[in-house]
Image (cartoon, rainbow, N blue to C red; front, side, top):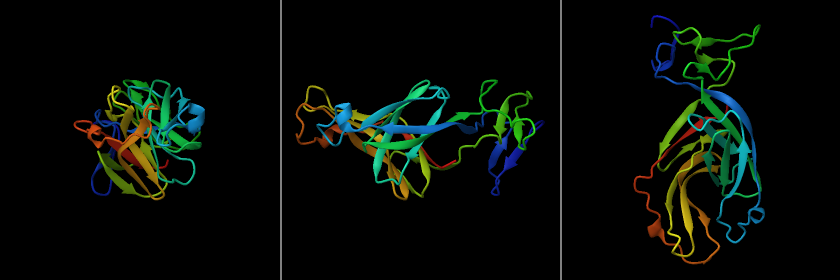
Length: 234
């Protein structure tokens, strides 16, 4: 390393290296709360399995690189979620109605040579690691960094409290509209009192033909696999 700073953990794993352009550190850009309405207010009251949803605007969200994490605002009761990220906003889907979630937006420290995070203010204490160009920030102690606890591929779980989980939109299967009722499955995050799990769930069932027997054959996962990151609260 000709210029910059390198930080290793006790087992020798590289944590920060200003000379490694392939290593990206995600740091906190924004936090807030998403309020989920009732099924009845969304016109979904015909089936209690339908996920409720709400959109949230946040200028720090970029659809190309932002990571959106959430956790229930109150003690988890086994509710499941997934999200549809956009640019400047996202929509959160929840199996539990009339509730709220805290959200956390993490972005890389820079996009190209444009800094996203800021250095500590003048007069404040802290540490800033720059790239070899001397201006592009690789790490700043002025904002919290993402602390990954577990990466889950497909189905799995991680035990702990105060956890936040990455939200994505990944449908596993949608039952053909020609067969009544319409049903949609998705990969979801489930928040339990002391753990987070990841798997699939029926998140939407159409109003036509409600009460018909479900057909498990339509839950075809195939190549529809995804990953989720569980991280400690910042």
